[in-house]
Image (cartoon, rainbow, N blue to C red; front, top):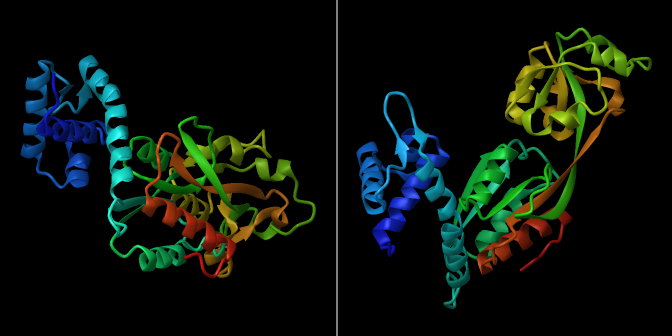
Length: 304
């Protein structure tokens, strides 16, 4: 089978349906109607002579042939992305698009002034389109690996052979409880022990559950959060204790809605970095944005 432009577009639609586990998410991501997506899938199946997925009232499910096509399409779209990155700046002006992912709830971190970097980037490369997505670390890794993001700012929470992390800053997390929690009045008590804390239910982040409980091996995690805002909501409920970035928790600790347990003796450190695909050759625009992000974090006044 020799690929035509229509086949590549149909493969792109198929990959979006797989990654969003159905038509609804793919419709939003692609800006296509359900009939249009169905037509792309039908055309692709006819070209390949195979049923790629089952869709209907019982939900979406890949066939074995569909799994094979999806996996084999990965290097194709990775190569297309690398080609676009390599040629988009051949002219005198820097053009193209950069897709940036940022982990949720970093906007309150004074050590990570992303907006400053984006301002500088806009001055240097005004003809480059910029897309920004805020999401949890697991989603950013997936989007980066799938080629839907070019750069991601996130904690280095896992080893991944296909991803390179460029170190940026350290983010400090402390253990907090809400105003109605039994430990709220004892938060600054010198005699507060690990066992005292471990006797109460924890909320943990799905991507860092082992880290959250590393100091409290006997603790029970009875709630899980998909992102930092969900973590804060559960802690503020007064039913759970859990870790939050200190800069983010200040919003509520200044209003006495949260208190830090143990005077930060159980503080955790999260290493933040810029994540890029190892196989990619960065475009001129991507290199500029990475440079500006690093300069903003170090306080360099003029990176142009």
